Image (cartoon, rainbow, N blue to C red; front, side, top):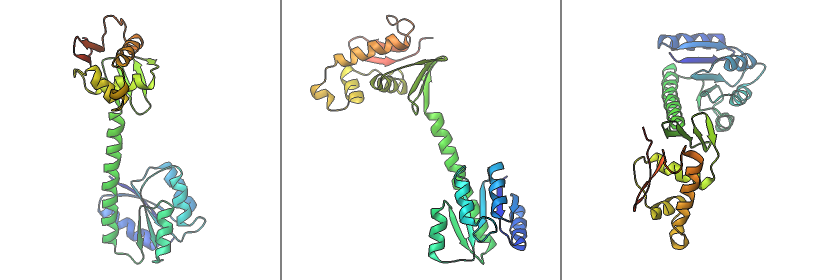
Amino acid sequence: MPRVLVVDDEKLIVKGIRFSLEQDGMEVDCAYDGEEAVELAKKTEYDIVLLDVMLPKLDGYEVCQAIREFSDMPIIMLTAKGGDMDKILGLEYGADDYISKPFNILEVKARIKAIIRRSSKNKRLKKEEANNSVIGQGDLKMDTESRRVFIGEREINLTAKEFDLLELLVRNPNKVYSREALLTYVWGNKAMDSGDVRTVDVHVRRLREKIEPSPSDPKYVHTKWGVGYYFRVKG
């Protein structure tokens, strides 16, 4: 059930909006001045805030700015002012949309539903991105966002190139990469012109010394003799 905060000092307007939104199955809280609005927004992560510009104590722009300091919850500005400058101000302070009074409640509800849909999709994508940033197999885990590697609970300190090398192999388990391919992928295309494939061997050896329980009998980074290296977790 979407939660909406309606902020306006005109109680009849608040009452009408609240009734209409509740008819559509939304949960509605109300505030009648700017300070009350900020306090409610701090206590609850609303799906959307309908915010009038002309308010006692703090005006709508100040409320919008205050909310943006601690939350990215969607905000629609409501105002009797229809000038472009007021619209620009609202958007610059962090509002997501802008509706001029007098408004059609059907339009308000349509805008609310569109923004909630978009916001829900963005939250889902962010969650998926966060989940995708952690990769690994068995007890080896890599956080590609913070560039940290763990074996169980123990953090392993890798150099930038060691991390890039391991990430490529972990993202493509059981795929065998030649030393030439690894030199190109990890060190860049220009590396093949002046690079030495033994660079790859040195980095694999150092990587194994850091992550393998027994580097001579690797658990993670394996060698396909005469071909190259690949990532596989032994059972």
